[in-house]
Length: 222
Length: 212
Image 1 (cartoon, rainbow over the protein chains, first blue to last red):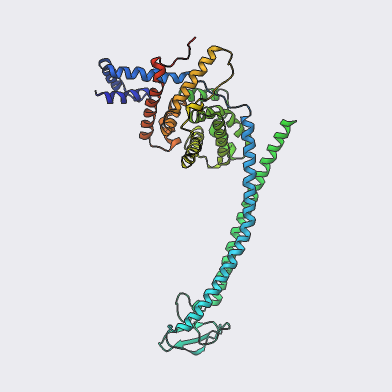
Image 2 (image 1 turned 60 degrees about the vertical axis):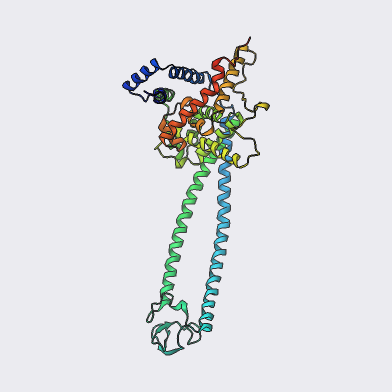
């Protein structure tokens, strides 16, 4: 057995990881190798010193300090949450407003760019009116045709937002998007309701815990 | 492991709840259960952190912070590891993060590099019986041993202390430090070698604490 192997075995033996055969092998090596025997003795003596260490005791007011820190941390968390809720509501309004502005600006940009660049093909001509929605049916010279809502826009101008996915003719997007919007609003409100319910339960639980803690402290101080 | 087993046995005999039962009660909102856990582990955790840092004030601060974190994150505890292992993990990470922050700011006094000239490397473990000369000698020896522990580089020291002083198994140390079993084994052994080198002057008789 090599000395490096013997030292590896020494550590394994210390951690009770050697089987009987390996332990015998180590003993045989130690019997004939003074260097490894010295290593074993020094190691045992050195690590044996650790037994001299006494277990230091935590300070007397340790538990009280832990309780105090927990109470303070919980109060911080609750304060932060309530602050976030308030600012969250305002930031939600802000972002909703910003998003609405963006949509208006982009729609305007599409409107003007389409007109100025003139790259949308030949001029469009009104060919008729949709019976149900009152949308004007407009067709281009290049035989492309699309359906447009007549919601105040001048006839003959193409609105990209009327057909964002390029589905083409005979699609009335107005009523459909309203339905989608209502559906989304319903989903959002249901979700928000659930979040609020969970929060109320959590706050109630926190309240009970804090009250218990307060009672405990007041009893102790009395 | 022997210490752990005897502690567990004594708890079972006295009909006390296990750590895991207590932490589940904490998850359900019982602060009394958490008080019991603090009482049960405060000395062990404090001693462990004191061995790592060598500074009683820092050890106390880390130990308290460990319990606060354990309470706040009690709902994240899952019984895949023992509660004590989880606690050691939190404590070890706190110390490790503090060291990392200090390394980024090298001008600040380092936890691991004590300046022996100003006595920064020496800590007072107990100061109850300064009158007795024998106890004073024992205190000096304890200081010497603590100093030797602090001479072990940080990553080996954690594994060394958890194994040799806290008697944790390799698996528990692996779970606490996030290192693989092979790495844990080699770190413990290197820690042992560093420690042996550090206490060699005492073993050779170059350092004595009982002159009179």
